[in-house]
Length: 320
Image (cartoon, rainbow, N blue to C red):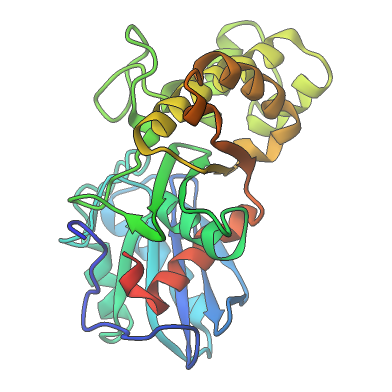
């Protein structure tokens, strides 16, 4: 498939989960994480660090430290990277919207060098999360699904007929940068009114602060707690987020005839607060019968989905 993930050197050639484990790496705007994934999908010790706000080499140094610690004494045959986007899966470079220090950074080749030439696969982090849910979680048994990560940013990954649909450059499914508000706020991607400008955790907090809510610390967890306690602005922030999320989901379902949408990430951890207004908004925006048929569910794997998914892609490169 054009734009699918490409190994940095060689290819695993493996189907199934026999032999050595692989290293799974997750690159996000908030944190960097890595863990060995042993045959059969058993996750080893997880190592995390906050994502630095410095230049390209500062971010790389933090990632290299995470990777080195995560490997420890493990025997790994290769590595998979799920990174915030956009990215260029053919060139192996990433330019995450929420990591300003990385623009066109050659993360795949740098990691392959660190791993002494072992093969490295690079995909969007929402794609890796979708694959994890497809194999091990809430996406099992479906034909067409969208996996979403709603956190510091909003990402998406498509699996159609049992294969990742990555698109020409590896960025297909980027639902966070579909436009749902024609006169909306500018987005770091360069557009305006994107789903991410309304639905991401930081966007929700900014809106709530601008409309009279206050807390210490002013973050997504305290906003969710305030909504549970009945604070009207916090409740409105989740309702506003849910409407934008529902509009994006309805559009994706109309385009791709989805069976299921699986939502993970930090915002989804407040599912008890997010789900009721999301269901109500879906009733408004999902009009056609086949669009309404798409199930919308919470991730079963939470923070492990991306790590398990990217490991599965190293074992089964023909899925992309």
